[in-house]
Image (cartoon, rainbow, N blue to C red):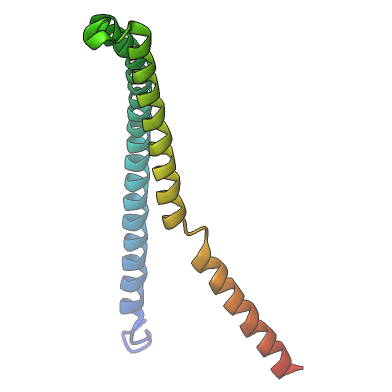
Length: 137
């Protein structure tokens, strides 16, 4: 077969097919690497959350013990009995928890979107489809 019988761009098409296959393999390998890195990072994140959770439980458990220890040390100081110190510390911890919970709830409600934009887009799409159906019908 002479070179005049071959299509003019046959070599270019073959090279493009090879390049497309190479790019596909490269993207596949990059995707696999990213997926493996994400899996490893998620495993590390799970471990971190578990350890932080355990540390938070230990810290919260220690607060009443520390309050009791301080109340024992302050027993009789300024004429206030141990029982009253425990009440003061307990109410302080309770008020702090309630205020913190309320502030967190208020912050959450102000920032919670709840798919607001997505639902708005869906409503607009529905209106567009209704108009489209009216125009065609």
